[in-house]
Length: 480
Image (cartoon, rainbow, N blue to C red; front, top):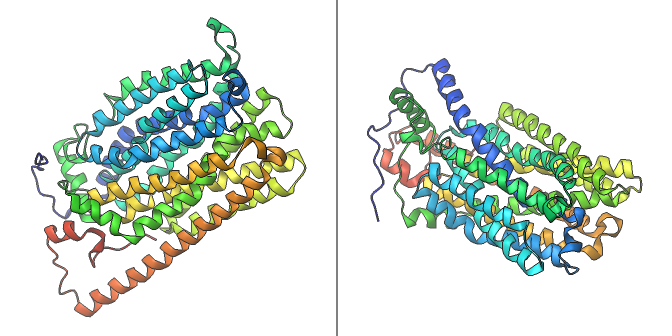
């Protein structure tokens, strides 16, 4: 195994605290990371969810999909995603995000284009599996990259902006699907085929630009001067392990799998993921079921997703202001549950459409917060990379369940029974968030007592011990 590149300077705790200089460097990092990575994730979510727009534009009929064929195509995407997620993040840890993330984008863009030329159900199933496999590394990879550029209390807002791209992709996708659908017959292809082809071409084009924009690791970031890079790493080192260049060891991978909190983060996302993906993939069908025509249903997906994006940004701002995550995640689940109840209980299209808005706001907001939680609370680097990937992997098993539960035979009454199951999954997520909140609160208090009893005698913990112990160190405080 090759020895990781060693940083030229060992970081030290910042002595000349200059908030204005820190803000300037942080803005510089923001401008380099946030726009390009948010766009890549917007494209990722667009290319996985546009199948919902294609379905109501005639795809199922043209491909002669069997009754469960559409659901199988949705589910098999997440099978590929789950299988390749953890390996993709391990590769990222041993590779370079500047090459790895744009390459993933280019490959899944090509796969997305191929979706537009499939001729039968078998072809659709195969290409959806490949799409899931090629997209698997982007989200956990970006979350991990954020963790080596931002301090723990700075990450949630950045990830919220990033995850807002998922919500905006739904709004953008609805408008784009409506426009592209009018190309029906152009070049001898149907409108739904052009949805896949043109959106895939857009992805490929942007991926080529991304090779020149996506940054490498923070300790060798070329868009920062040497002094800026040193100051950034000093800030990170004072806060967590992010400023160190930790070598890969399988022992760190094992630490992630042995940590009960890591698994609880994963089960938390499992609960939310069921609602997130079933909602996003079946929203056009649900709106069409309210009595609207195809072109209206495409456009009417825009307001719920727009509300979701603004809800994410507002709630995460409040979460950062109060320095809390758990209560806002629980509140997001509660809002989503209220939305599902309205959708189930009402018989008026307008009221049901209002319920759809609440579901979008609650589910997307809760997801944006819970997906940052492991990156804030898991240390060191390899353990965190595996924890983030494990969270998405277990979470996406919930997505598979959602895709299979929302069967065509249950579409009467706007998927009443599957929507009730979604409520159950969100209640499960509330239990997981509560468990994390209580467990980490108790552990923080226990560590505070230990430090008080030693009267600071062991405060001189060596850097080697700090890296080795990570979040198990008595000095490490969990973000609640």
